[in-house]
Image 1 (tube, rainbow, N blue to C red):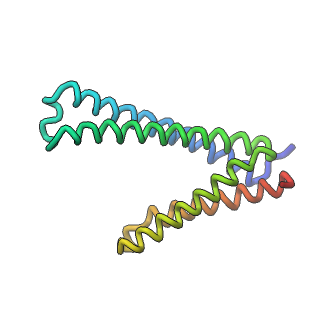
Image 2: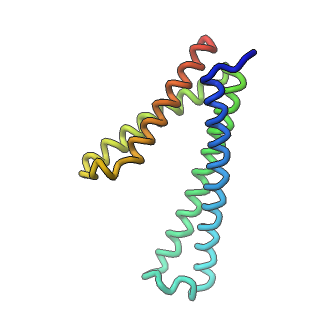
Length: 145
């Protein structure tokens, strides 16, 4: 069976998410490692005002690595749905959630009076989320769900 354009795009998005997730996981591991190194060797953390800064670095590294793992799980779901349209529902639900979270982020930034010129990432994230929702919806229709 020939892959439709939506399924090809979803497959490519899955591959890109695997790559981004892998690099982000490595970055999170390096940051967490820096936090552990700073906790064990106080001379590395001399410029930090308190020990709380060292724990913050560790927590940020762990959170970044955890987020990367979620990205790779999403990439797996995307690739599975691209190969078998019957598996599109998790991607479709997560796409709706992504659109809603990006709208919430945009509203929050507008309420905080962030300049429109500085909200490029908000608009880009919302556009990508909407595109992924359209693609997931096309595959959902293809699967007859």
